[in-house]
Length: 124
Image 1 (spheres, rainbow, N blue to C red):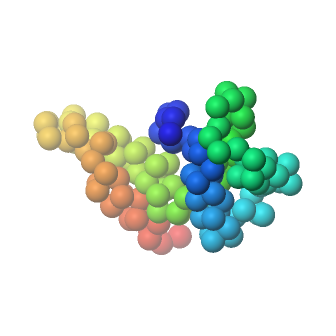
Image 2: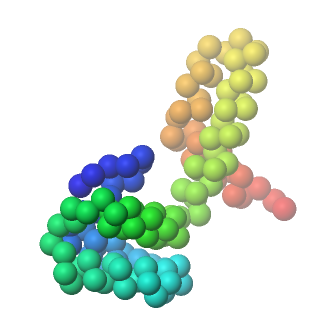
C-alpha cells in the first residue's frame, strides 16, 4: 500500500473491496459517490488485482478520500477542526502566563478530544 499525506492508498482488489464494504455499511456509498465514481471502483474490483497505473491511483485516491471524509465521525471531525485550534490558543495563553508544560498541549490527542467533546456539549 502506498501512502500519500495521512491516508494510505489502497492498491489491491481486497483493499478496495474493504473500503467499498465499509462505505456500504455506513450508508455513504450511494449518497456521496456519483455513478462514474462507483463504476470506477466496481471495475477496479472486477478487473484489476493490483493497481499499477499512476492515473488510476490518483482517481482512486480522490474517491477514497471522499468516502473517508463522509465516513468520519462527528467527534473525530471536531477533534481535527476545532480541538487543534482551541488547544493552540489555550497553549499560547498558558505559555504567556509562564506555564512551560503548555507547549505540548496542542499535540496532546486526549486534550484535543476533550476540547472537541466539550465544544460539542456546550449549550447553544
